Image (cartoon, rainbow, N blue to C red; front, side, top):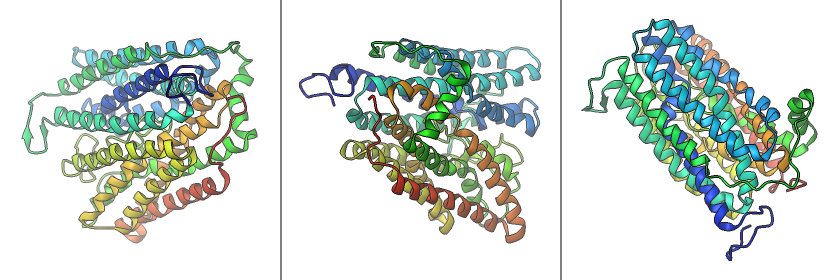
Length: 475
């Protein structure tokens, strides 16, 4: 690690001050992501906007679906741009494109254009975000892998995922106030549609422009020999070969997919809170799919799933009773847990943080399964802390990766959103059809039980098969 006297660390050629600069910039870029997340994390905001523009439920779901589908492209980007000297430029360009696309939507929403054009702009922006957001995170993980000693990543994680959720809470409350004209009992504005959504996009764009500025100051040590672009098939599928041939990476991938099942359950958790006394009227499958706002590449939290109102028939009616409550619980606990997990990483090893976040993630679903009444809502406190598995699982895979494979390996991590999407539909179907057989609460509880089985299997595999300190050959 970096020595107190500022000399070079064993696994990073940069001095301690430069490493500190990189970890602060990493936290700042993620902070911008968190603050802009109501727009930047594709899902309910886009669905609500499309509904207000006259789209049906199918079209309203297109932004999220297309976003998830486009997350395959970072693998292609990793192949096209393999050189280390392209890392900083890659982060900067990705964030710049994202900011520009958000600004374009803001302008188009207020121009006298057909609603079909405006809906198309929302969908195109979601597709752009599906490419550039995971790609930016992929590049930044490699910046950290090369520019910050492994021993110093604990403080980096504490700062990033401790302060970041506070910004997410502020962004979430601000977007709630802007779109609804009020915050809890306070009347704040009288903005009419589409100006409220346009301003939300317009505010997100300069926040993401800050990430462009921050990323320009990364310092990345260059290798003696730059990588060359491999043949297409070898370059694209070589990363998959890494996970198939390396035992640690293979089991880490399986563990991640299993524990990530919790990313697909929070919409059901929120809907369940509304059916203690009466069944929901909103389509459970659609709500579960819309809940997939947590990126497995570590991009951030589920922001809007807890704002779905099962008593409504569309996405544009937000549950004031639960949205602010659940998001406040989630982000408050996530901020505290982010500090603690980072401290744990500094005192132990990557496996300890992975297991700790996985166990707490699982505990939130256990809570949802067994607790009812007012105490049920505390499940979102536990869930907020457990969501940090989405940061510590990639950190474990980063620690297990050779420096030359980091970019491809982290690109493949972004593809783990695909299983989560299928699981969301599965959990929605279980809740909907199980509810017909066992009552509305029974259907939701069965979906929680299925989620738990998958998550517990992942924890057992991690405990038994993953080494505490995954060693990469050329680190």
